Length: 282
Ligand SMILES: Nc1ncnc2c1ncn2[C@@H]1O[C@H](COP(=O)(O)OP(=O)(O)OP(=O)(O)O)[C@@H](O)[C@H]1O
Ligand SMILES: [Mg+2]
Image (cartoon, rainbow, N blue to C red; front, side, top):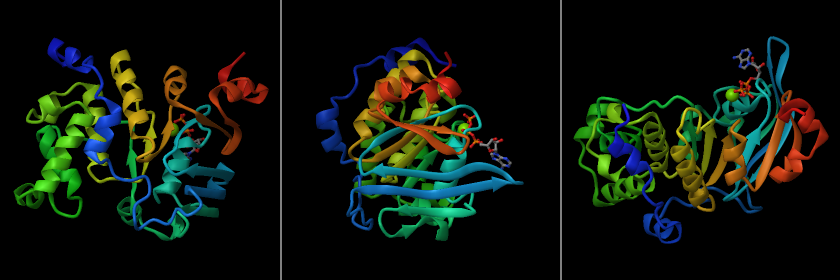
């Protein structure tokens, strides 16, 4: 589906992150409603999740700082996706604490409430509306509380239109704004879905295997994009692509059998004997 023009487009120089970040006014790492007094946006303490007696998460402790870009790695079945399910309220832990900021108890909130509080999640498979244009997809995502047709009929405010324009720039789809989303490449659909999160100004973004199936150029752009979003947002990125992890991470957590096995810089965890044993291989 990808045309040469699209491929060229993917290779355009990245927006100047310094000026664009300010210009696009991307959310805030911690909004006015969220108490992050101690600089921690997410706290998971002693979290356990059991499926028919099998512990997918086992006394998991994890803390994400405001504005941090954290990578989560670990073997298949380690519990990475389950952890995201707990954070977003899809799966309820049998034990443990889960806090968003200082005061929001994620265990007591519905999935919708958690999303509205500022936690955005991107699943691996893009879920864009293929028949609608790129712009319309962003428009719908921005107005999450209305039906599709009511949303599209309601007039956008100048501010909303500006925000969509900024996000289109950020995800490099400005020139495709009026194309049906179904005509985008796989990678561009992924970027559109990230844009659909960004128009909602989430404070914490959860991204599960974001570069799976992307071309090298798309993967590189994703790395630039995530680095430019960090600081303004907090990001938790699960990824098996170690080249990608190396290009974005300053802090890595290794999960294994539902618990944290190691944490530190990528160099530190790569040198850890236990990590080599269970994940990286000898
Ligand atoms: N709904 C469920 N019912 C039963 N078992 C489940 C369920 N969801 C996950 N599991 C099991 O829990 C474990 C953790 O799964 P999870 O999907 O969180 O791993 P992961 O780290 O995301 O792995 P991958 O790298 O393959 O995506 C696995 O053994 C999985 O089979
Ligand atoms: Mg997974």
